[in-house]
Image (cartoon, rainbow, N blue to C red; front, side, top):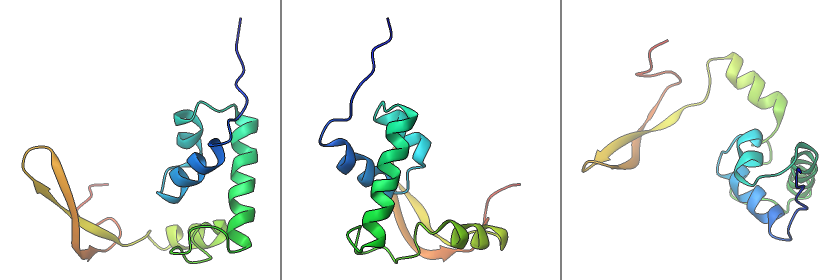
Length: 106
């Protein structure tokens, strides 16, 4: 028997936190064990809140704008912070900024 899970009150906040940290929508759905319909609803709620200015105030309004992301990706992608290893298993994010695909092999 397949069990279905209804979203818990914290799911919206958990979903938004994952998405704002850069997690892909499908990955967020899997991590929270949501059905596809539930994930679509939470994505709509998150985007509606962001349009009303209720999202992460540190993100620019266009941060989740699909057309903007497609345009940037068509031009080669986003710049990123570099990383530096600390010890054996820790990584620190630091400057300088790296252009898209810097140091990555195709």
